[in-house]
Amino acid sequence: MLLKNLKWLSGLTGASLLFLLLYYNLEQCATLLLQVFGFSRADRFGEALYFFAYEVPKVLLLLTVVVFVMGVVHTFISAERTREMLSGRRIGAGNVMAATLGIVTPFCSCSAVPLFIGFLQAGVPLGVTFSFLISAPMINEVALALLFGMFGWKVALLYTVMGLAVAIAAGLVIGKLNMENYLEEWVQTLQKSGVSSAGEGDVMSVQQRIQEGAHHVRDIVGKVWLYIVIGVGLGAGIHGYVPENFMASLMGKSVWWSVPVAVLIGVPMYSNAAGILPVVEALLGKGAAIGTVMAFMMSVIALSAPEMIILRKVLKPQLIGVFAGIVALGIMLVGFVFNLVL
Image (cartoon, rainbow, N blue to C red):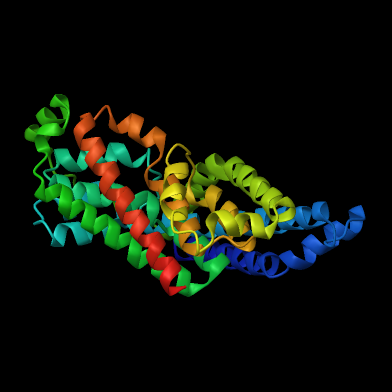
């Protein structure tokens, strides 16, 4: 067993070295691609092609590593264990814990809804459950890793702090409103029925944990890679062809209404962090204010129209309206704070 574990660990080390070699030579590879096809970054198409050739592998490499690591981490923290940790928690402490747990769970806004139902059934308070539902898609490990890789630790840290504040505050407000009666009847029945505590699983070997991480990569990256390519392609078009003064006039710091408009534009859209971040990077490169594009990104991830459709099966329209309104106000506040301090 020890020899087999060492074999898997040595393979993991080799893969890590290959990642570093590729990641730190992406600029040279993108430049070489332009030279091979006879393009120059001095013209618009060449600049757009460079952006695409550099960003696609960068985002996919970052995403693969983060998803693999979190896949291994999730072998220690199951959904059942998460429910057990949150059930019975008081308002306040429970909101903080739920929002924090949302960071290490790889769920988009739509896939977090089934776990949302499971939390309610396990006896987790409604407001605490909403803190998780907001945090999981908006501040997950993929978003943070890509933000760190693209914009540095200051942006990633401020995004984390503000995102957690939105999730915690929104959950607290919804909890204080006592809106349990606005859950659909079948969810209220399920909530009263309770659920038996899940037992601890078998101890996994190093090989099994690495295999689980690889399965996460196949499952998650396999589902989102096309969105990444499309998102980077859109970002490349913006980067290469949209004039800087045009974006600055619409989404610059001096345009006070740009933040609420960005939130309204983002809500009908649907993407995950990996798909929308290349667009965010391109908008910033064209003069858009960072708070405005962060508000746009948050609304796309946390308030998507598909999520609202799925939530309608669980929540009555009044509660959906309260949830969307509170989160939208929180996201706009985040946008204004970003524009103020950065």
